[in-house]
Length: 378
Ligand SMILES: [Zn+2]
Image (cartoon, rainbow, N blue to C red):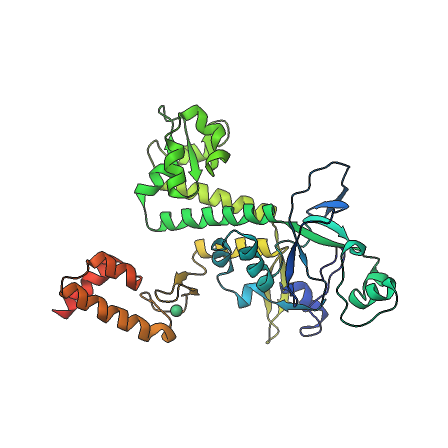
């Protein structure tokens, strides 16, 4: 159980000093659930507590730990999960989808959400206890000594907003990497006089619809069209405009992506720590404040090229390909599936039963790769 103050630490695996330097996160063994009925007593905004006044709107449901078993599992997101930000961006945005991710990787923040009084939470006792107090002590042995009496609930809508932000940014990044001018020209829109440009982020079909609106309406209608809207003109970002010239598409898109990542890293800060390695040489560690911060940091590393990811053409899992060949396509374990898809695909092309495009799609490769296969076969 993650309490407001304190919280359990990494144990003695690395000693007390290492705990400060290595980023670890936890998730409850018994999982989370969506709480719809309880009324939190306080709101918690990045560590700052505030009483909730009467009639104040609280967005529900709230994600809270299942109090049935209070054991937490701890893991090292930055070491053990190389592409967590991509998994996060792929979450199915539903109560089940988010729950599945949270049960595996934990909550998004350490200190953001709503505070629920422990006494409000209904326990499901596994063993017989005499009094309520005794029951609390069993589930929350640290409560008494620390004086903690709240647990944190994270609203569904907070999760949804963060997933969409990440998804939009990942999408933008891919379009930039592929130099997809077709899509990016809907994202970036210059003023006729060249005095500035605006950017619209979202699903491509939503953006296309949004761009049909009159210009003045676009400035206020983003929310209605599921669009994240950003505006760059001389008043807000002169430096940006000095870098670009009217009509540029790729450069404004890159500037936008940097801007998104920088804002996120500012809101979810990282800390630098120093530690000695096995040979007693000083080594730098980066410690995010939250899982969300860790995922934006991973994204940052991918963009700067420190970490490269590809989706396996067969199973679709994201893989860190830094140590792999330039043309890596699939896991070793997915190889036989890939080879049989390739073989069947080539046969159906030669027999005139399927177009090259369909086979490329089936095999998870580009059309030019399939054309190369046909070439090699001749
Ligand atoms: Zn695979």
